Length: 175
Image (tube, rainbow, N blue to C red):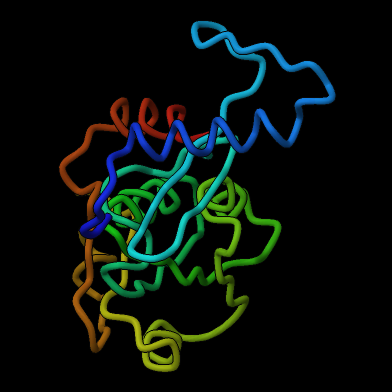
C-alpha cells in the first residue's frame, strides 16, 4: 500500500535472500512449486509485516473500518446476522453470556470480540458509541421487530432469507 520506488518482486527477492542468508548453515533448499514453508510480506507505507500464515476473516471490508454495532446474541441466527455485518466492516459488541454458542461462532472470526453479559440495547449502544444494532430476526418475528426501540439504526440482514438459506450459511461460517 502507498507509493514506493520498488516493486513487489524486488521485495520478494530481498526477503528471500535475507531468509537464505540467515539459514545458510542449515543447508536450505528452495522449491517454489511445493515449499515446506511460505512467507508473506505486506508493505504499508513505511512498515513491512512478515507472516507465514493467512488467517481467514469474514471477507469484505476490514473489520472495524465501519464502526461498532451491537448484536443481541440469543441464538445461532443472531450470530449469522452479526457475521454478515462484520463482512461489511463493522466490529461487533455482543450482548450475551460468554459461553453462548452464538458467541463461540463469532469468536472464530474475531478473537477480540467484546462480550457484555448484561445491559439494555440502548445503554450498551451509547456506552460503546455503536452506530447501529443488528438482529437475526426473520419475517416470522414481525412483532418483535415492530417493538424494537433503539436510538440507532436497527439492521435485520436475515429478514429475506429462508430457513434453509440461514442453515446453509450458518454451516458455512461454523469452523
